[in-house]
Length: 546
Image (cartoon, rainbow, N blue to C red; front, side, top):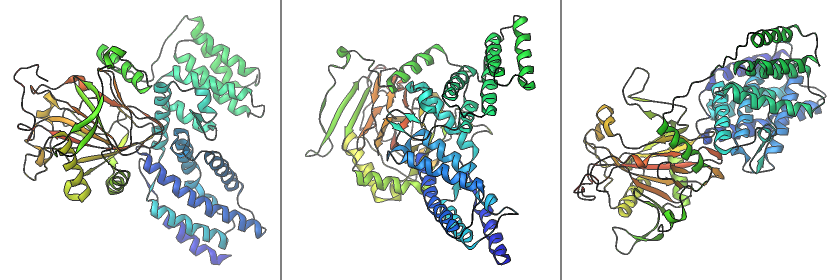
């Protein structure tokens, strides 16, 4: 038996050295890579369990419990091939990694645990898999996914009861665990939202006669606290009295009950916020339209849309035409269909993946908290890679294609004046979205810390956005102020001007990326700068020229 300790110690040391944590919730492709690694590890663990049973041996109980949990979760998820891109499945995958796979070395190599050649063989698979993966989930990822679930509930009016049961729209995975519920409620921005989740969980507990008394205590006391925080001490009293019917001598709950009674008798209805929100009236109007458009509501009347049409548009090459769909005339927002092939889309993704990093927001001012005047933010959940025309022939080819269709210049130069920025490739994360924003800098341009090749390129005059994938639900690009929705359409591209011909920024081009409910959204865009467009798109003769 002692022959096994030396290799075990070496393997355990290797495990501690190769464990690297980073954010994975910010892009679906990272979560998918975690899931692929888990599939490999599960095959190895299945072989280990089988071999140990064959040899008349047993593994620690907590290892077997975890094994059965993964087995059940995967069986449920595999009933629908697309559920790996379901936000609840993301939560399950990350939770299993943090509470199970990361703990496996401690469980198998505990001081009193028996070491065997089967365990050594499994650990070789474990280490080689993690070496390939490099990045592993962290508790920050749990918070990110929990926040995404709350966002999706708000945006798409999802049923909390359905989510707890593992149902999202037309797909279904394993139900949420108690631990996962706590992850979600800890991430919620208000106590009112906590109340909805705890009430739904109590409804679930009532249908399960085997619920542990500690689970009852946890949920009832958290629900009571939430009611206390929103200024409803009488309801707090009612909730705690219900629990005491099951556990009448619980001293902790009795203390909480007296606290609620004291506040009720004092007539205090103190309301406490978890997180304060600041939205002016205009922002609130835009947000309302944003939410409705994301939910698929048509906000324009038939009279407003009757003149919209699809036609074959001219390009810079006389015998080539584009498939053009007009979504808005003023400001101009259009879709060009079949402008990038499936093969090209896959190639773009493969080129971008090694360069992907968390997406940043352009800061109005440079501060110590920003990176080069930029910062990451929960209002933008995605990862980005920047690709130059010189990086690959395909990138150069796509730039020339955009030029032919739009008639604009996209030349990239090493000098201080380029006609466009590098191609930005994005993969959205769990519930990935970008709240309403504009692409132009406007008065912020003077404070923008532009790279050398864009120092004198002027503002962003137009945006071209390729859709590289379809998604099952969500992810549309919407323009709240002009009430336009652009659906995610693989192979198509959206195009709009952010600055009018007069040179005035067009605030009506405020737009947003809706949260992705099911699927993996990949897009890439070109921001086209004013420099180089003077002859391509002449200035208007009046201030209101469009």
